[in-house]
Image 1: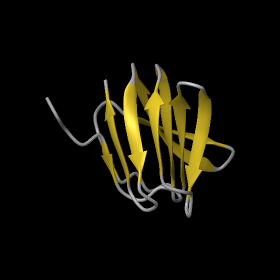
Image 2: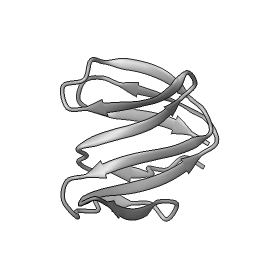
Image 3: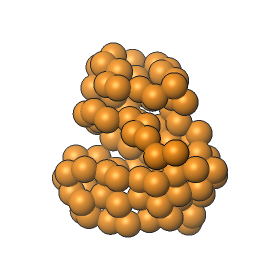
Image 4: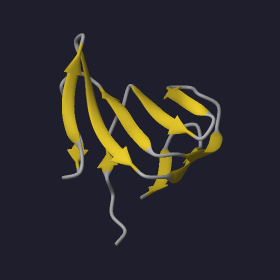
Length: 88
């Protein structure tokens, strides 16, 4: 079933692309990418958790807060402001 896994602000996103891990930050150019099995890391602003889905967990690393989502594969599109992803 379709559902929103995360909705909220993020400092950055680390994604497992098929040709390697990549990061998206504010003002990144629009892009589309296939995703491979791995972990999506959503860097949260401060300790704010946004709206986390039950599949996500929060961790702190060196004062940075991340929501973690394991995926099997997927496709993402970033339009310069919003990131949309279809993941399994």
